[in-house]
Amino acid sequence: VTFALKGARVIVKTYQIDPHESHKMLTQLEVFLKGVRCKMSEITRIVINKGPGSYTGVRVGLAHSMALSLALDIPVKALSNEQFLKTIA
Image 1 (tube, rainbow, N blue to C red):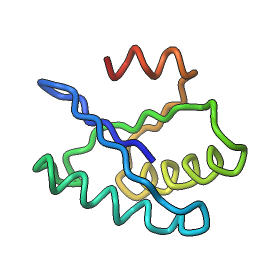
Image 2: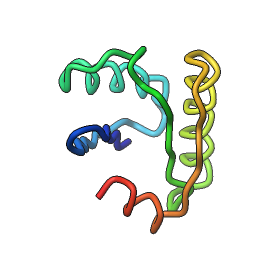
Image 3: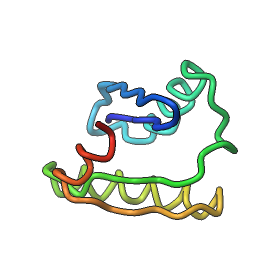
């Protein structure tokens, strides 16, 4: 899983998570946010990459993103791989 934070600068960090342990994604998000000194409440929107990726992997990522979007009351947007890479560049 890869997380990116875009503010004054872009911070990107990738974590290896066993495909059978997707529940650890939120724990890794907390680790990432703590490492960049950002609170969950400071997130203003979520942007996800529609692929490429495994069908299940993309669905799991989307499910986590939608849950965070609802919990934090912020928008979520899915972008193509090309658009996503331009966004975090």
